[in-house]
Image 1: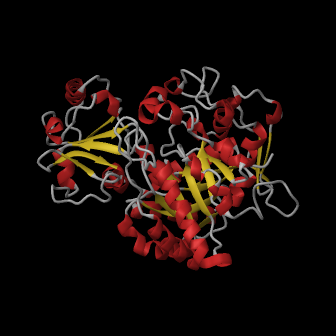
Image 2: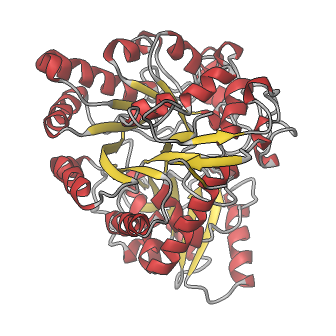
Image 3: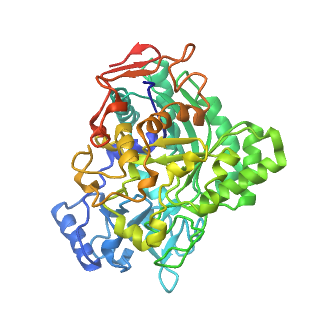
Length: 500
């Protein structure tokens, strides 16, 4: 079969977490237990510069964890607690001071990228989305070029092992200097003949203030980072956040809070940006978890096409699409907007078994309308698959074969190559959205090539194309869906060269 194309990953961002221990998961049932857990860990590990932890927000039972709580444990070292999905953090006063965050610091986008404040307007140390990014990624400044290169080589070795010949790197927002360091090293590796994987890079933004210079930055990236296996022609935008922390932008309010959140920009701003990108010849890739954010993109494309007509030529992709409004489902095909789904999430276990949590967030009717990839596929839209990882780890969740299995089963079981933390308690609805193996393979091959604009050379086995192909000891077409995640190719060829 053709080699795999993973059309939304985070190659550079993952390097940071390859060297930054996220710390232990905080086991607690309320704020008091949370603080006690942190205090015990600090006591057992005295004198560290930075203490890192992971926390499920629901463990706090709606109590507000503040910088004062963390200062009471330790005020002379940094404390950083990462919410499990990576879109929110809690920090102590030491961290706030290091990043010059005060009560006067404005929110980036109210409701979406913001600093949580108490009743008197004081920052609490909890922050969301773009507001957290500089702190979340600050350890990147400490990494040497050697460390970065070693991590990237580890990722390359994984890609060869699983037969992933092409990826779209979805960016590292608010860490531009580090992001470019990774791109320079990847280009160096390519010139040295050590980058067999084709990388389609991007410039990523999570702050509307970055938009005025965005097109020029993509242009510079395209010029400066351009080798045989490395190209940049895409602007990546984080249009919203995640469902679990209510930063995904909704058309219909959340069932539990009656709030909607907001998208990064509105449809008029999206139209204007698309026209500028179109003039420059660059593409757009947008993080759109929920229905209002993807609607802004669709509306923007519709407005831009109405103004430009046949001159509109760029590729526009909406990624993730966890929940979509009924009225927009057929618009992807109509407007030529690409739908990119992170299929390993389609078991509803992105950070543990989340069915009950999604039920609370969305209600019974809408939970049955999550991840509607089959419905969109059947409209004739171009649908592609991805793994969207921000950490290398042991690469289990990077596997396209895990994505294929979950795309077909919407379930993670003991027969799945996955952490027990991600086992499902039930098949995630709706069964009507299950894909078949042919559709999974197409989404991971030729469709991905079309998304990235490289289908003249990649994505299928044809005369005149690059000879990127895989050989298995048995056909994936005949393999049982459950357990497909354990598959890997016996032989891997990139550009006609045997890599494995």
